[in-house]
Length: 478
Image 1 (cartoon, one colour):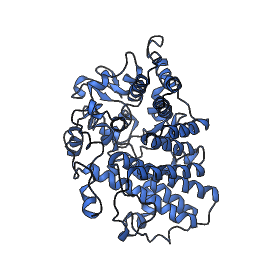
Image 2 (cartoon, rainbow, N blue to C red):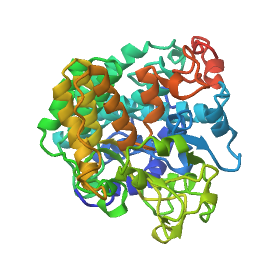
Image 3 (tube, rainbow, N blue to C red):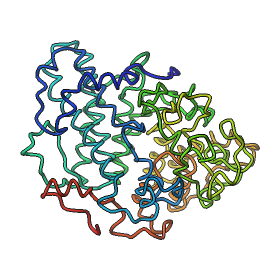
C-alpha cells in the first residue's frame, strides 16, 4: 500500500506515442484499430492511455480544480491574470467561450472514447482471462468516472457507450439522470471485474472499492439515500480501508496510496508531463515559479471550529513553515495560501511536475456520504457514528484533544445534516468538492452572492461543441 508510483503511469507518454495512430484520429469516430488490438500488451497499452486525461498535468490543461473551487466561497483567483478563464470562473462571468470549459469537455470525452475503444476491441483478443477482465473493468470504471465529472460540470451531456462513426456523433444531450444510471451500471460491471487491490507496477489502477465508491457518490448526487448506503456498506465490507492516524499522510509524497485511499490519481516527477501541476498553479507567486492561482478566503479560514488541526494542515498563514520557506501575509492578497498538493522545490525537478497524487475519493469521504445518507433518511443517531469517526481522527491531532472538536450530540435532523456539511468543508477543503457540494445541497446562493439560481447549477456547454453539433441545446441562461 505504501509504494509511491506505478510504472504503468510513468510509461504513459511512451504508450501514447505507441498508440499515436489511434489517438490522433477523431476521438469518437470509427477507428482503424483492428491491426493494433492483437495482443495482451496492446490491451494494456490501450487501457493505460485511458488514464491520461485524469492527470492535472500541464499538457492536459485540466482545470477541474478551478471549476470546483473558484466559484465557491473557499477560494478567489490569484495569479497575474494570464488565464482570463480563471478570472471568469471566480467572478461568474464565464461564457460558452471560456477556454477551460472547452478543454475540460474535450479532455473527458477523449477519455471516454479511449474507454469505448477498449471495451469494443479487447474482448476479441486471445489473452489471459484475468488480465482481460481487469482491463475491461478499468475501462468501465474510467468511463463512469469521466461521465461523472461531465455531469457535475455540465448536467445533461451526450452519452456515447460505443465507438461511434462520425455521422452518428451529432446527438442531443442525454438527461443527467439517464447518464447517472449508466454510470452506476458501469460501476457495477467494473466492481464485478476488478480486483480488491493492486501492488507493484499496477498500484494506482482502478479497484473494486473505487468502483463501488463511485457508485455510492453517484447515488448520493441522485439523492437516492438507500442506494448510497447500499454502496457505502459494500465499500466498508471489503475490509481494506481505514482512516490513517495522521491526516497529513494523505498529502505527503511517501505516504500516499495508503489505507485511506479509495481512488487516487497518480502523478510523478519525471519531467515527462505526468506530474501534478497544482504544485505550480497553487503555489504562491513568492515561491519560485509559483502562479498563485487559488488564494484562500478569510471566510474559509474562519469556518473551522476552534483548535481544528485541519485548518493548519490545509491553509498556510503568516509566519508558518511553507515548504522550505516562511509564509508571509504578502504571499497572497488574502493573506492565506493552500497547502495540499504542494511540495518544496528540493523535492521536484521542475515546479509543474509535482508528485503528490490527487486522491479523488478518500475513505473519510465514504464515511461522510454514509453519515449524510443516514441523516437525510432521519436516522440521526446512526448518522453520528461515521461522522464521529472522522472528527475523532482530527481531534486526536489537535493541540488539546480533550477540548477540541467535541462529538456532535444534536438530535434534530437538520442540525445533524448541517454538522455533516460543515465537516465535509473542514475535512475535504481544496480537494475539488466544495462548489459541487453547494450546488447539490441547493445552498450555493447563500454562500456566493453572484450565484444565480436556475442558471449557475451547471456551466455552459462549449460554443465549439454547439457549433459542431446542431442537436446540442445550450444550458439555460447561457
